[in-house]
Length: 214
Image (tube, rainbow, N blue to C red):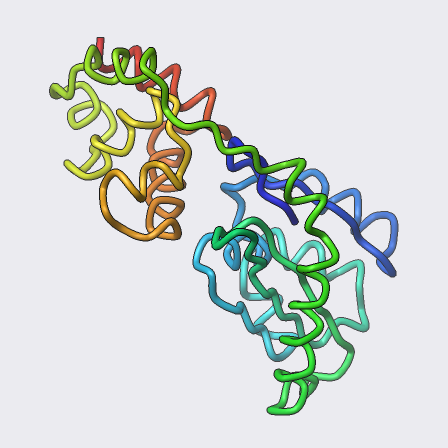
């Protein structure tokens, strides 16, 4: 999985899985779905599903996906970083429920780092950070932080502040710098805002936010 400049998740490659599983995965490749790969990107932490039962109970989607892969007994999603940003994730899956013991953890952490360095060109293509310009700042000042978002979408003060920045065109990295918290926190709050607005991408969110704050 790789995050693009709009923080939408894209399935980059899948190998060794049945066509039915790949089709299902592609259908659910969005930032809002509960996928180990997406959760690893949001939190910056390894998602470890160490046995079949933990895989099947993780989410409805993963239960359906695992039904096409009867050999799958453990799954681990590692976050990928590029230029100090969370930019993607890699998923390792095994037929052995004990695959990630201490040695395995060291091995696949190292392999993830190697893969991360090999994908530098892909990260450069998909993550172009555009600073907020004068026009965006003007738009930001024009947006009203009144009761629209709080009343209609039950947003907290911090979510309203982040939503206003989203509507002004800020990336999660820019939001984190402006509000002085981590980029992973900005991602997490952005996902929560998407859920409250019932949208699937940044453009849809920005349109609703502008409408609610005018």
